[in-house]
Figure 1 (tube, each protein chain N blue to C red):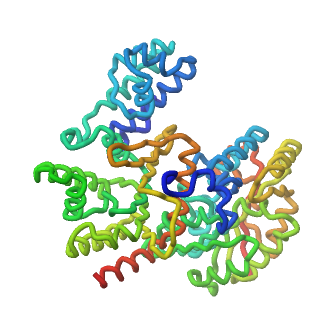
Figure 2: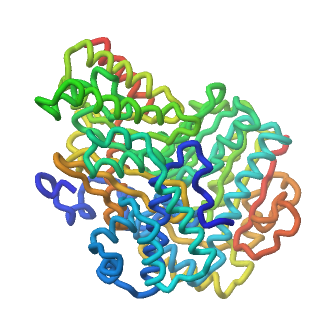
Figure 3: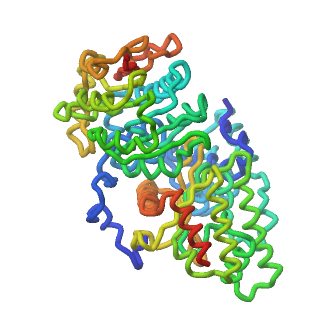
Length: 292
Length: 278
């Protein structure tokens, strides 16, 4: 079995999972050799942070860097090296969002890759409906909020990225999207009534999709221990741990430490437990639509 | 982690007003089982206890996988040859591949399944992820296996108790102490179903590798666990089928029940299926 087995078989498998698998293997070889990230970084004329990004699959890497690192780690088995080089070439595959790099911050691109190849996406959304569920008009209103003064053409490109992401939901082998949406996102209008109505109708539609589970967290559930929006991504590929994505105003954090993962999963489970069941969510949204 | 405006991280385990079973600092059978099967929904406490169990009893993950494979073969038999269309699955566990309703509805899409588990984390996952076919139905009850009266009452809103059904109690009864009368619990459930109904059981045993598993269970029970293990013999586990006709091949090691020939590795669990006679 080739070391790259397990990726490339699904319709959605992208370069990000290849990078994560490559990174995981580089980390195991480095640790087995007893080499620190600093030493590894120095060897390829890069920083410790670059090694960290490489090993978590969040940076693109050159074949030469991988070969230099493997030499440093004393990995010379021809089959192992060849397997890793296959991953390097898969990791270099162009993703659709490469065409949108002008409107994509560097810290967001890894998320797109992970989202595109995740098997389970669990999201908690507080202020806005999840990007994967937004109508085009709603997405435009939300994008304008975040990019005041941007030219229309730029706004349209940003909206286009969001719409393109949604193709995931209708892919042949879609990820399971399990979203908890705070009632506040529905009550505080992000746009005019017609747009909000259409957005609620859209939520009712996605809630019916076999791969989507939507739960509204009603005000009546009381305060929850989640100060903000976060997303947990899970991958089927062996050896890749869950990743939590937490977005800030000018950056994002990717969490993959076991104790922090446990904590985010615990909070997500509590949110899902406090939220309305999927069937009750549909009734809630339908009642809301009638009142709007 | 809402450290800026919310409760600080260190407050989490002591929070009041939560049901104790949502306590992720105590290892829970369903989450340990998920870990043993290679799942990613366990917490550190579950992984720590499971890792120690594996260290003293390396066959445990194999037994867990064999139990999962038994679930599939048993449901395929029940939905196929036995013609059963209703399932009461007590001790569901966290959703993984080939859950009861998926196996049953693959054979007969109109199958109706009620899942029962006492772990609210299991319930929240089951409710979100275990979707029925449009022709069939799935429902979820948060209840303890030691409360058969409540299970039967609540299951009746989805299952038709005037028709035969299959009761599945897999890898659950060894978490019920003698003082809670596991055989009595099984009897109470089977008293509530009509003749022609089935019972599928798997339960841990101390008949194989006895010294080692006794020691491993002792160490397990000395830790902070939501449920202690009670290992039983073939004779004790056979008693769960009192009044029922055991289907071939009877009560056998879990990897041998209607399995392809050649599976002879030691597992420390028995499995069997019985039918309630007229």
